Length: 307
Ligand SMILES: NCc1[nH]cc(CCC(=O)O)c1CC(=O)O
Image (cartoon, rainbow, N blue to C red):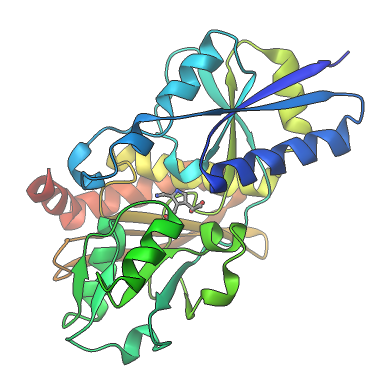
């Protein structure tokens, strides 16, 4: 037995809708008889675009309204960028699964096509991410970082209006909006470690909904689930959200899992970064240990000065 109708809750931005449609398409390939509806929501995060993200300090900013709809049965699956989903979910909800991970790297989009290392002290890089800021300033201390917010298209417009000379954003968002040709440079994880779960699409469900759990499992990519869960275990140990200068990236290397973690000061002067390898089955434990190691080797002080 499976469900006849699935209602998907999503934010109403173009990117969110694209991701919800990916889930819908995957479900319809697996369950051709199923009726799948997409229900868009406006969230607080969409409404308060004038305040710097790092100053709002609200982890459920982009997810809460949709989670309430999930809890009261209005929708069966909430689809989010996994990156935006807090590590602690509301009582009664859990991460049911994830689609195959897309592009994980950040990208640079510059006004005149220069790459990150060709930019000079006259150039302003637009980002609202402390993680990006810390890593950019660590490697290129002479650059200026300015706060640019809004959805991908808004940020592009702000750059074209002259508010900055280049933008650093998630490649996944860019590619999903069909803007790939505007990308100047892909920034490898060696230069900018991507955010925890960047590029992955999450399917959040009610903890007790075993029917929807089976449905979501059928379209879940196990390797993406394994790596992003390890990265989220790192983030939970740090007690960070998407608004602290930390990162963790996990990938399969042969049969092993390779995990790289990072905590950086927002002025870029200190950056702690460490890579470890472990067995796949130990990825979660290993991620927690990596986070503790970084916290104990100066990471805690860095985060305390920010908080
Ligand atoms: N923070 C906002 C956000 N949430 C998800 C994406 C893109 C998709 C992804 O990173 O998985 C973005 C844009 C960005 O960070 O540039």
